[in-house]
Structure formats: C-alpha cells, structure tokens
Length: 294
Image 1 (tube, rainbow, N blue to C red):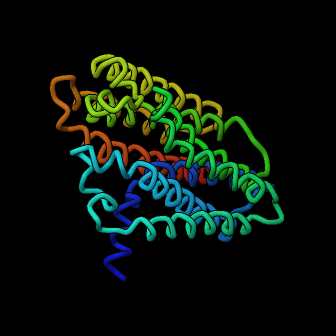
Image 2: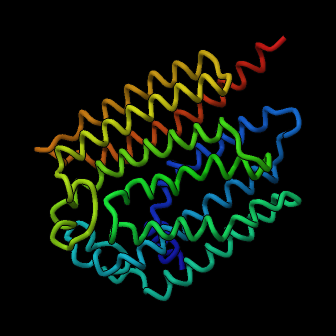
C-alpha cells in the first residue's frame, strides 16, 4: 500500500504543486487584507485541498490519456503506467477519487455558492489540457491558462467576485508557465514532429521556441510590476520582483538550441524558487505594510 501511494505521488509529480499553490495562497492573503474578508482557517484548508485534489485529478488524467505516447517516447517510457508500476485501473480510480475530493472541498466555502458551481467546469477545463497537444501549438498556454485559474479561484472563493489584483496574478502565471512549458517541450521536439503532435518547438524549431519563451517571461516580469503597482504593495515585493526577474533571465541562460541538458534544472529548481519566493515576499510585504500602518 505504501509503495502504491508513493508511486501515485510520483505519477502526479506532487512536488510540482509548488508552481500554482503559492499563487493561490498569495491571492488569498491579498483578499484577506480587505476589512470585510477576515482570515479563515476553514477557507485556508479549502484552498489547499482544492488545489491538491484538482491538480492530482488533472495530472493523473493526463497520464491516462498519454499512456501510449509515454510508452513510445524514450524520455517517458519509465513513467508509471507504461513501466507497469501502476495499473491503469488504479490510476483511473485515483482520478475519480481526486475529482470527487475537489468538488467536495468546495463545500468548505459555503454559503458562497460559486466554488461549488464552478467546480465541474474548472475540472473539465483542467483535464482538457491533456488533449491540447493533439490539435494546437498553443497547448503550452492551455496549461498556463489552467494554472492561472488558481489565484482567480482563491479570490472568488473568499470574496465571491473577480477583481484586478487576482487577474494580474493570473497574467503572471499565464506568461510564466507558458514560457517554461515551451522550454520543457524542447526536449520532445523531434518526437512530437514524428507523431504529428503539436507544440511550438516541433512546429517552429527550438531556436524560435526559446525566443517565444523569453518574450513570455518578459511579459511575466511586466505583469509582476503591475501586481506591485495596482496591489498597493511596497518595497519588499519590489525587491522580490527584481530578484525573480534575474532568476527568469538566468533560466534562459541555462538552455540553448545546442544544449538542452539543463532543461530540468531550469524547469523545476528555478521555477520552484520563483513561486515560493513570490509567496514569501508577498506575505512579508503584507506584514511589513501592516506594521507600518498608522
């Protein structure tokens, strides 16, 4: 049983939850600054559970849908379903349980009805990403659009409305995730081209893909400055943005058309620091502003 649980966590790459969850928590922290939205442990629990269950369901579904491609691709042949570490029926059951857990977790936000009302459409959109590579080169931005829902969803769950601040946080995720997913997809450019799968690297080549990823990350930086300005954040967050900008540029220095060996370092190590770092400096900024208030 413990072995199966470990394999399931590896299957969904549970550690990659650090990409979107910090943005949901930062959005929630900014919402809790409002006088009519006091902090709630129940809401915090709801956000964490919704994020974990939704991502687990979507990632497991992706492994189910892509299992034949994973078995053919030398880079992914050792993934759990093609390698026989997990049965297909086990992963299907896990997907169903995770989906039910996500919908059930939205009940923690009642009497606000919107999380429950939007739970199934959101889940379907998240799972829809698994098919995007079959028909559009913009599949990278379908993934980023799926993850950008996290700060919007957290804000709606707490405030019951859409606002500028979570929308700008969503823009940060959209351009950031889209950019680093393009970098990651460079590893499979040849395989995708052979199998008629769509991606920016397979359609336009690795050099052009890296340029598009760089533009996407420059737009990420611009969106971060917009969050700082419109969110009424202070010096700590500004310093953090400058540091994150340096990290994103460093990420691009690791990957070149002639050398893709450091893609995984750029993909996980740098981006984990970006997401967790932004949460940390955002919380520090909110705390600093609260202490500085007359």
